[in-house]
Image 1: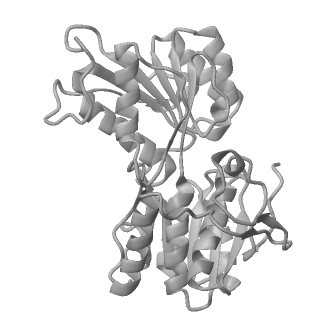
Image 2 (image 1 turned 120 degrees about the vertical axis):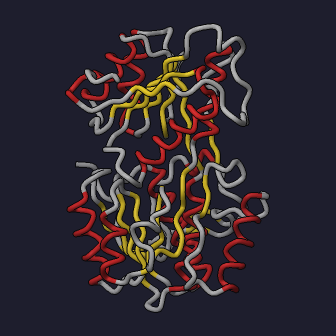
Length: 368
């Protein structure tokens, strides 16, 4: 077991058993005959038992299951964005890790700097907007699941008010707020989404406090873009309906979770590792969603009426088939400005989203 990574953080090296029972992806050529590919993951928060980092770690474990003895993996958890992340990635590269997954938005610049020093190492950055010869980016159309969760909230909410606890005001988070709102108002045109910003990805006490304030403002449904399980726990305590995010939170909020928008990374991680092992890896940005299976809805709570569940699943199928897009048609912002008169918003515009749509109560927070 490998214990001495920088910052005295806990890290585990996991060598998978030889040979997986079923392989979705081909095992790299001659993998069993040569040394395993050394793969490292850098996480912004503790792994825990649910949430953003937990889902990435589940992807790491699935990578091991799929590729068996062809890979050897490690992870470093609770790494702050900025200089600390750069130090950790530099140490991993120096210790011979050939592929590093940097799984938080603020890791991009540190990854780019370390990549220049270690051109033989491949870096995959989650959510970034820059690539280099040995740095790729990957992301998901999280907003597809957010739209569906919002639609379900709109159907189930009695007050017509939903609370949304958000981390940082980056485009991905803003997309999620707007898609959730558009979905909710597709079900209830008078619905409101009240937003509370954290300016952090992981702070259980602040997450709980923000959610409690939103409930006090009349929200009878809650959702979040933050890293802990504090909000699902509060929702269960207060009997407030939950639209979970990142992981299936039903083990934490069994009576109130309506569904969760879950992230599934194993197949993607296995493909990247196989490509590196086979020498065919290239810095080609990746974007997946419902169609690719990167985004999935958790099972519905039994409290969701059958007709409502059918409507949500029908929209889910339509999005996966390309027949429905959350940002299609007329899009109006909070100030009444028409941001899109018709058509479907392009990825380039979505990547720059810096406004909140009609129906959102709150403003876009400034970074500290």
